[in-house]
Amino acid sequence: MRPSSLALSRSSLPQVAVTGLGLVCPLGNDVPTALARAVRGDSAIRAYRSPWVDPGHPQLHQRVGGTVVDFAFDGLDPRFAARQEPGVLFGLAAAAEALGQAGLADAGGDDIDRDRAGCVVGSGLAGAELWHRALHTAYAGGRPDEIARMTAISITGTAITGQLAIRHQLRGPSVAIANACATGSSAIALGADQIRLGRADVMLVGGCESSMRSLVSYASFVAAGMNATDDPAAACTPFAAGRRGFVLAEGAGMLVLERLDHARARGARVLAVLAGSAITNDAYHVISPEPSGAAWARVIRLALAEAGVAADEVDAVSAHATATPQGDVAETRALHAVLGRHAAAVPVSATKSMHGHAFGAAGAIETALAIAAMRDGLVLPTINLAQRDPDCDLDYVPDRARRHPVRVLVKNGFGAGGVATSLVLRADVDDVVDAPRARATA
Image 1 (cartoon, helix red, strand yellow):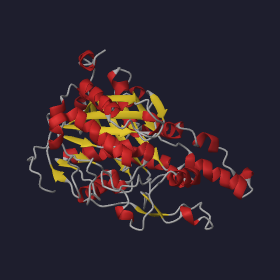
Image 2 (cartoon, rainbow, N blue to C red; image 1 turned 90 degrees about the vertical axis):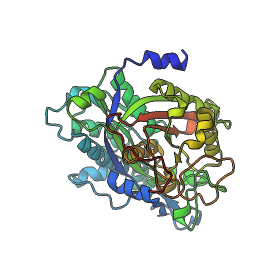
Image 3 (cartoon, rainbow, N blue to C red; image 1 turned 180 degrees about the horizontal axis):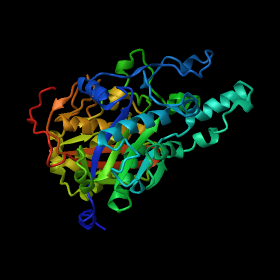
Image 4 (cartoon, rainbow, N blue to C red; image 1 turned 60 degrees about the vertical axis):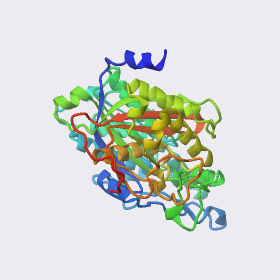
C-alpha cells in the first residue's frame, strides 16, 4: 500500500490529543524547571563516577553523565522505593505530573472509564541497575540470602507498567516495551495506535531509564566510546566537528494521550495532536545507521503520510542527534531528502546536547520538552556548536531557544538494532501560539 493510500485509509480514525506531560531528567524534575533550563541552553551534563568502579580501574573514572539530582517523590514507602530500580521511581514521578496536568490524577474519581485507560511504557535496559545491585550482594558481599524476594519481579519490563496500572487504576491495554534508543518515541506511537484502533480512550505513554547506574551497562558504553572529558558542559556536541559520541543519561518522560473528542468533552486542555507516526527498521547494521539517510527518510515520510502533512508544512524538528559521527550525518541527509528546499527554513533541535542520552527514555523526554516549547512558540536549542561539521548543514538553533511558531513538529528516534520511529505532532488548531517567525533569540 502506498503511503498516500495509507493516510487516506486512516482519515476516519480518531484523532489523538496530548493532554499531559511529565519529566524527571538531568535538566529538572518537572516540566517547567526542565523547560526553563533548556530554553536558556543550560548544560545538565555533570562529572560522573560509577559507584561500583574499583579505584584500581582508573580508566572508568573521570567520566561524565546526565544524572538526575535532588530527586524526591513524596508518598513512597521507603521499603518499596529500596526494592525498585531508580528508573521506575523516575517513571512514577513523571507519570504523576503528566496525569495531574491532564486532570486525571484521582484514580477514585468518575472522570474517565478506567477500563479504557492503559499504558505503554518502556526502558532500553530494564532492570539493569537492580540486577547489578543483587549480584553485588550475592557475590561481592557473599550474602545471596539478602537479595530481596521481589527482585525477580522488579527487574522485569513490566515493573513500571504494573506499578502505574495499580497506582492509577489503568485497566486497559498494558504493554512494556524495549526498543533500544527509540523506546520512548515508539511507546508514544504504539499508545496512540491503541486509541486509534478503538481499544482505549486514554493512554499513559513514555520511557524511563537508570541503566547508567549498572556497572555492566556503564562499562560497556565506556568501552564503546562513551565520552570522557574534563569539561562536562561541553561533552555532548551533536552536529559539531570532532564530536566523539553520546553522553549517557537517565530520567523519565511521560505523556498522556487521549482521544481528541474525549478530551474536549471533559474540558481537558489539548497541548498537541499526535497526527501521525511510523516505526521501521533499516535492516542495515546492529549499531551503524544506513549512511545515505534513505532508511531514516523513509520512516519520516511514512509518519508525514499518516498525518496527512506535506513536507513544506513542517515547522520544526526535534532530532535524535546523539552526537555520533555517523548518526548525525545520516539524520541530516534524511531531513534533506524529505524536506528538500524547505529544509533550510526548518529549525532542528538536538536537546541531548543539554541533558544527554537517556537511552530508552530519550524519545519521551525530548518529545515532552518539544511540545512544552511549542506551546510557548519556541524551538529549543542545540548547544556546543562552536564549530559545526560541514556535512551537517541545517539550522540547528545554536545556544538559545528561538521564537518561531510551530504548528507541525517532527520528532525522530533511532536505535541499536536498526529501529527507527518518527512522530508528527500538530499544535491544536484552536489553541496555537501565533509568534512571529523572526529568528531572534528568546
